[in-house]
Length: 271
Image: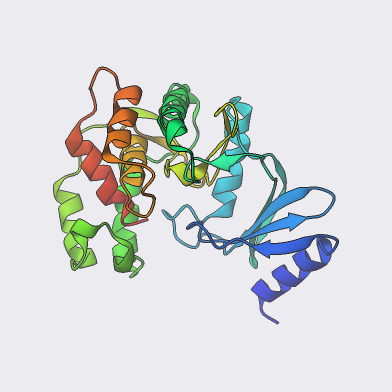
């Protein structure tokens, strides 16, 4: 029996009192299951260090979730976790509420976007010197090169304007547009509506999820991915006006650089 089967069989036995529902929405890179029994839980199972910049590393996600909870920001409560040569798993308590990407009535969408922008500002106001996780360009650009060399770039999932190009061509563009410096903040790393859970009544943020890429990063990175997600035609409830609203709410002084926004969207193609 392979290690991954042993791991799954052990978890199935441990949580045999729960019903298991596979969750296929999203791109966590892990097997994700909702467990319902005495309470509702979420279980993630993945290989250890599957890709150094993918956010699929549950060891990294666990450490970041525990740290962010210590800072007083809302995260899903971590109940248990483990990792060995067979893989890693992470158990969290289910958070009530809905993601910002779920369908919202038209008259609430502006407020949803405002909640996204406000939480990004709150996250970015954490003391960056206290954050032990490095997601600066010194880490992410070499990881992009590794992804290309290892054939890990999914060219079927790039933004429309980059379709038909090779991974090497994308890397050449990335290398040519790396910013000269960074305005470091504590960033989520994959800050988009599916990764923010909201109270359906108050629109308070109940939890930030999928934290495997959280760390010290340029402040343009999270707004770049949030705006790209708000412009995604797969979620047509949001419009270009909502993307503009996010940007204005997050940076009312208009001090974000469009070139750096574009760079971080390109950098995400290698994750």
